[in-house]
Image (cartoon, rainbow, N blue to C red):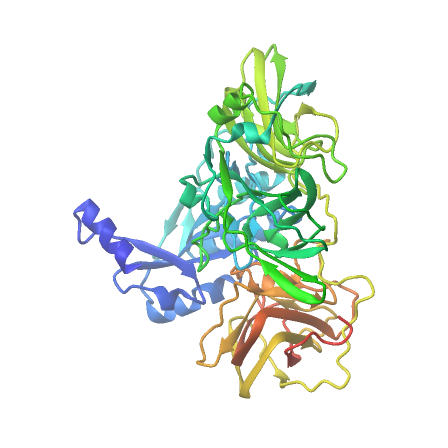
Length: 607
């Protein structure tokens, strides 16, 4: 923070330049610099007085501002479309304005992360979708929503001037008229008849040496094809590797399986192979982690590829060292060139899809232009270019199924669409343009929740390492263990809540290491959770370690206590305590009262 402050002031040649920094209200003192103005970040539903309580104690004369008041939230691939209630949003705004508190609405207008620019969240890896609709009052296409009209009605009440002496608003002003919306158009279904295999997009190929990341191959976004010759392995083998971010594996162009970083998949069973068979790994880079400790997010294969098999009673491993690396940049010019390249070796059809991975091109004609939403539901995973513009990523799992195309990128007459699909289409090679987006449709191969059918944790015979009561109310709470504890799996058992309701919530959770500081949550996974609310929002168990205090895990109404959540820390670790954050809304709704903590090096019975 101090380095950035000094760079800015030096660049402006203004040592007294007024600067501000924004942070969580629970965390700002850890990063706060004395010569900067401090502002708070929080979202819809937050306890306004509590968010500014500490600031008021430390700097009673400081101006108060919410630098990011979240009106919605961003979507991730494979998760439900995020929404936040309009009434709760305007209630928070009214509370701030009644107190003379300034705010910046994040977001007023949703947007689009064109091309490859959508990022990703951490801990773990949760890539964002292309649409940054954000459930904002003004949507991605610039259209006003019901939430906008409620916001406008609220802002009209506070359109006058703030009297700092009387501590109230004086007068009012008429708000300007709402601009006319840009027209939307429907485009009849059209076919993408032209095809070029994915390998036709390779612009740099290295045939010697070991594995390299995208960065080592001097490109940042796109895909890479890695290939190597295998020795004879007469039985099945287990292949292990770490791929960033989505890997598809082939033997002699036959699809074997995939490794999805989102799901922490790092191993795959390979069939028996003959000497000289070719192992091909196609890796697509997705959003880059854009904050936190994992921000150095290299793409491609970032570990050795190791094959292990038991041959005639002997366990043997192979680590190929000679690889061919072929890069495929996310680039329209590369896509155009692919259609004239003389390559005829496509990777195989897989998972019952209707075509090979590669480039598909088609055209449609318009008599008038307007905004539209291209429907990619027939397609697999990849990128789309319209008249040379990279409009973003698509992935059949959703929740986003359409890509927004602004009318200024379209033209009367013929328009070109190229789909770079690393999986291949799942049905007809067709697209149509809709007048309304589809950003809330999931196609998942397994539930979002973290409980398999028939699973039920059994804690009989287990002894908790800690039991007690959390305090009521907002804010972080820290609890120390009587003595250090070691293990890989931590079970949180919630016995009841302070509001005597049947469901409970956790916003954030940390384990404290042997030295009393927070353990890294990068390797954490949810091993089990007996109940998660995915109907009223994305309130899954992984929200307790997503670095976002405004999101939270919640169980469902009508499901009785106790509730259990098991965290897999990735490996055995020693810890001395925990930190727990209940929901940030006033009164910390559904905060846990009585609890027990269990720790084991192996999974609990029933899992």
